[in-house]
Structures are given as C-alpha cells and as structure tokens.
Image (cartoon, rainbow, N blue to C red; front, top):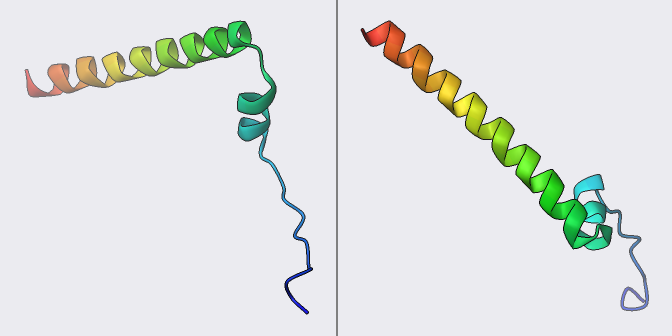
Length: 53
C-alpha cells in the first residue's frame, strides 16, 4: 500500500543553482560570495582589534 506512493520532492533555489548553473556561472557566484565573506570577516577582526587596543 505505501510502497507505491511517490513523494513530490521540492528543490531549493540553491540546489537548483548547483544542479543547473554552468561552471562559469558557479565560479562567478562563488567568487563573489567568498569575497564578501572575507570582507565581512576582516571587518570583524578590525573591530575586535580596535576594542582590545
């Protein structure tokens, strides 16, 4: 009875991007994300240095 039931799977925007984007597009987006994350982390580090100084 339950063995034949099919579940509809939903995909997130992220999983759709990973599955469907070209290598070039993935590289462009990943580079942007890494750059922004690095900037954010550097800002936190600089703020911590100014507080402890």
